[in-house]
Length: 183
Image (cartoon, rainbow, N blue to C red; front, side, top):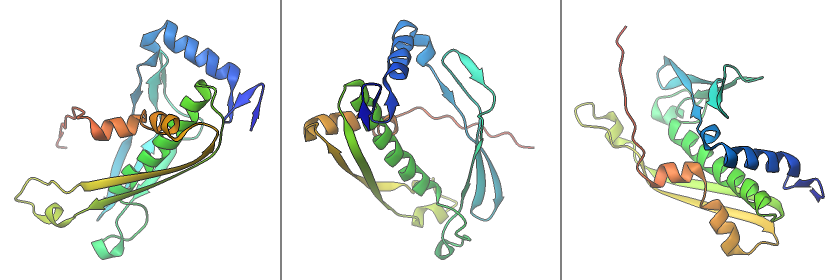
């Protein structure tokens, strides 16, 4: 949908206000995103996404908290009650590429009518089961295919997709620290 007030489903005034706010106060662009996970049993856990800090203030709870169950398929000794954590990573990548394309295209005044994003990853789980070795079970390769209906060129669309923050987190080293607190 595109009229004088919206582009790619975003209200132009909202995008302009957001952009102006972020440009005039770079500290407001600093966010702390959070997820809280609790193990249930076996491969099953549940994650709550509710609070975050951004735009210079704390948001203690979203209107509707997001609850996600993760598990593994029965063939991997799970109950298949949710996607695996690695599948969640693929979900995050697909959603990030899609929304980044929609946002950045709107800011660039490029109309996009449709976006579909397929993500496929090759993983090996054998190393995960060896408790005496450091786990390095991960994706060996991830492929992202984006199909977009737009008047923008393939080069423009590719550049817009490449700005995905989840893609950046996967392709550039991000420092991660782990602290274990024993109860």
